[in-house]
Image 1 (spheres, helix red, strand yellow):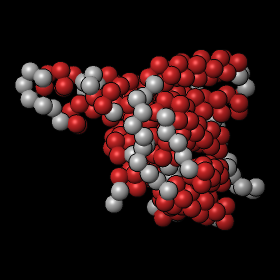
Image 2: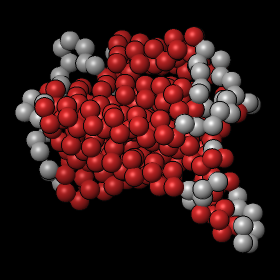
Image 3: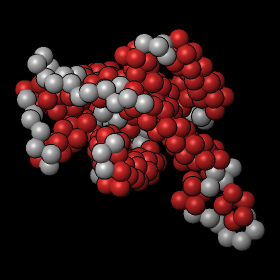
Image 4: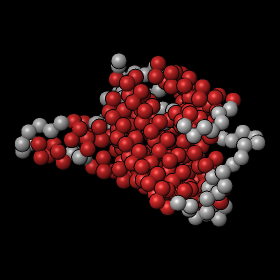
Length: 290
């Protein structure tokens, strides 16, 4: 199996674990109001699941391009829908089945045209500039809409998803030769023995950066969970989570997608929206007060 295709399979596993764990966080927070200990245990286990998903996706990014792996970011919602149907016995209707179908078709289209990523030197200054600009924009929007609960929830979730998308970019950077050349392990290894790729990847400053950004994304998402409904949170989070790595892969790493892979990315976002937007007549979960 070629490395790009393997990276997409690994990414599917990672994003599936991520979305199921995010659902567990929401369940844990809701249960905290009634039964503190079970709610805390569920939230803690789900949070550990999100950390495990980050490591799985790090491995996926070491195998393939950030654009391809990022385009798979919505695929975990299909696993979440199946999990909800099989385990939680929730109803899966025509809209949900269509969403799953769109996501599966997108994954096949993106994966079928996967090719090795380029070797262009990462433009680190561009990465930091985009991260700073986007953070300022979302912070301003958060301040402007802080009294409008529906809009504020969408903004906060979008900010969290955007930060999550930057995690993938910093993870990819940590796996490159440029990132690993700055690792503590390589500095110590020069005095002893040649360090391994894993130790170089986990001990360079860009790994610390993606861990910090990932934690910030999780904290921001908790604000969204406490103030809004899942129907507003998940689509906004997921759309940003898919788009940021694709655009960042092009601007920072010089990657490109085949036109049909772009179509696959659109199918992926469409499938995400079908899975997360409630159809008419569906009961929307109550808002969780801060």
